[in-house]
Length: 340
Image (cartoon, rainbow, N blue to C red; front, side, top):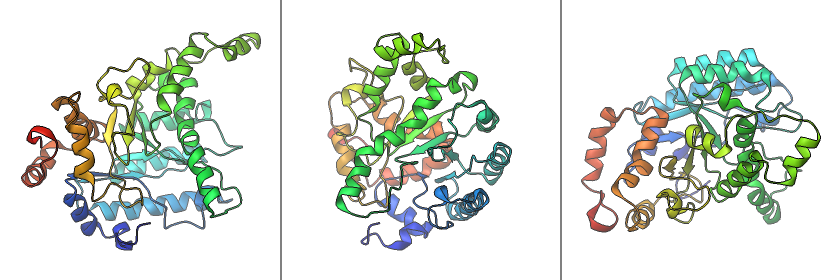
């Protein structure tokens, strides 16, 4: 992904932790970055057992990887939803392995909607586990014909946010958060620009505010969620802003001054996106300084976005992290007024 980082950034846990410490990162939520236990793209493979076996092999490898710093590396387990019964078993296995969350699987044409009743046992198992669900950017995007050209890549860039967001609006519109209010969904590296306009639009439709609502009424269909979509976002959803820059997310939104829907400091978390090419690695202090030096941003907001939200969502132990944070803060000071 980045030759200057070195391939071992993917599999040498001690080297990775040292790299993160150089950026002031106390703990890291690990998102799968292309699985080594696949036959091609496992999520497109024709054999469901092969897909499941690849995911479970990855989870076992991830447990070993995180064992180098178990309180500071929060691995996200992969679970295949092809069989509801097996998915429930695999969720229990992820919990027993001590992993810190569950990745949302890809949504492909011909598959099930996330709100179909057949998947309710899966959501119940996730809710009972207390683990968050994480939607990584672009998951479920079509492969087309495999072209690796500029135009093919830029098409993927244009469509990235749409495929990222499908899990969000399926869970909201399908009433999944009503049936399982303890579920938490985190959208990581999905970009943030689209979330405000989309939630505002969904709110208008829920309030019977456009022609699509009229279409639904004419078909005699009943609404299947109980609250406004924006309410579900506030109660059940979070955003990993990765790679983190002030251009990714509205500061007015973070501080609660936006007119329409916006991601607030109660939902936002910083991401370094190491070792992707677009990572802020090497510039982390600069990007954080732009954020914390903004006069609109209070110390409370800084603490939430850079630290507290991730602790709460992913169940990291603040007492375990405190000595590491104290050590790093001795050498890393950013932003106006000497904020640490």
